[in-house]
Length: 153
Image 1 (cartoon, rainbow, N blue to C red):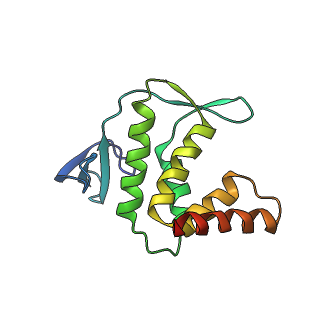
Image 2: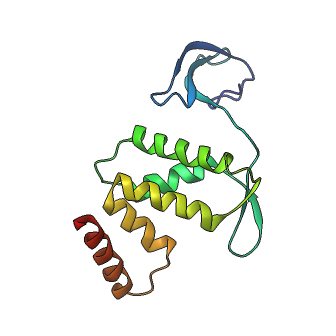
């Protein structure tokens, strides 16, 4: 594993343990060149996924991008990083078990919407405002109203 600090090719594993949801192995490493310590995560990957964007172009699925968008939606909410990690793992697992190697970005967005709806309603509305491309305040108000109504039932 290449050191993120000095670029040295060798590092020594100091500690290994599973993540809270057992979806990955967390490894604490020490660079043999500079002595810097860093953490890596090892995950099972069932298949290579390709995302078909709205414009039709294709790009490889990036879990980091998924985690980043979940983090932005959950910013300043009572949602910790472990919950975001667990949600990202669940979404990735769902995508990999679909049996398709190419997945439309719209479908990924639907999985994210479902996950955020169960996790935090404010994060759900934040993500929806970008995902559904609200153009004016009325769109936002209507969607937020439907979320409140659904929560009452």
